[in-house]
Image (cartoon, rainbow over all chains, first blue to last red; front, side, top):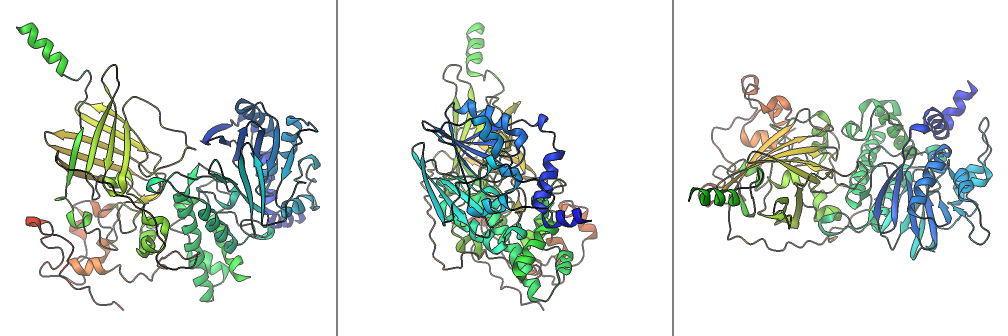
Length: 308
Length: 306
């Protein structure tokens, strides 16, 4: 019973951990998709990994699950023999930070070329918080080069890399990573083109922050001719996207928000809102039998965000 | 002499079953003209095999989105719709420099300068993680003199310009057949998200070597102030325009809601009677006939419904 309650309140960690335990990582293949300039998207299990390579070494955004670290590193080594210098975590969910320690160990350490693990300070706070019944996060994988400002700048492999903190979006520790020279944005789970966003209310997420973050991403994307291409967007999960794809997703979140807000104004309870199925015209697009975020879960997150 | 004729025929005949579509083509709008030139009426889903999700998505569509949300202003049609939309087309054949076989057709259309390549060289489609585009990724193969085209990697777009959606998981096949100066294109769209069965449409083009496809440069401009989190949409059950098409044309409302059943002639036998029958045509009655334009409907909008 205690375990059930814990799992309910720690939905993301429990679900992701259970997911990682259930998956047979031996069967997972890492797919490498070139994005633009020296940026690649690596797809395996868990969230997408962004890799930037160049003369100064390698930078990763998100590390999937620990058992996949050898396969991820093997693919990265095909792209560059250079030292791994940076890991950036877009947020604290296990399918994005799970491989931090294992990757760091495989990458080795050179005091002259140290590996830095960077995330918003709320990620570090949550990863170091004791959770009853859960093992502590491996120390070697902690993002101890955290930042607490609205943005953090790097310059690596000849281009500016800017981390923007998106407050209270899908969690309270989301970072969007802009590769300014390559014209690529890595969004983490703020943007998942094939699935409803996981608005993690327990960890500071909110639908209002989610919309603000999506709009901020759209401020940075500049499409090329015929409103496509130009700035490419690597989502938390799913295929490579661009401005138009983020617009469709943003519009969906706004329209569902509008509907749930209208129902709240009419005095409807959460159960009544769920029964009214305000997402029923989007479910065929954003929900499958394997979806982590069901229609009800998304509606509940929107309802709770707006009821606060 | 016979040997000479045979040699000539061998040289001029395609090495494989190939047909050259190169040149400039103008669309003929006699098929479904009001639906294509002025554009479809709001709430007209008749003949579309859509599911409930597509119907509600279309009901929620507010055309203000095109003017208020800058990202929509310069969007082109997607390739499954562009063969039906309003734009002329130029087709260029791309040939292998050695064999002179056609390895691709490249199309350019006037509206938003849409460009598309249809690969005939057997290359595979991109991975499932590759970006999607408005024109998608097209490959073609020959079936006698008919070019069969298969397109994947489409962006989310519309089946009709009244908000009936088509998802980015859709694919479509086309069949291009040239009859002298006429080109017939049949388009078959499959969409697991919004269609219950494939949507089949045909269009005809005429060879028009004199036409010039000019530039069509579009830049987005924010002209209407709006809140950043505002996307025009009708809440479910509040769209006031959904009955217009039924009332204007004297159709039963249920028929205008579409669905696979409304595709077939048998539906007429069980179709309900219209709520507001019309004894004569009042809207787009002679649209396109004898050069008349279609932009001035004579019928007044039907009165507000309770």
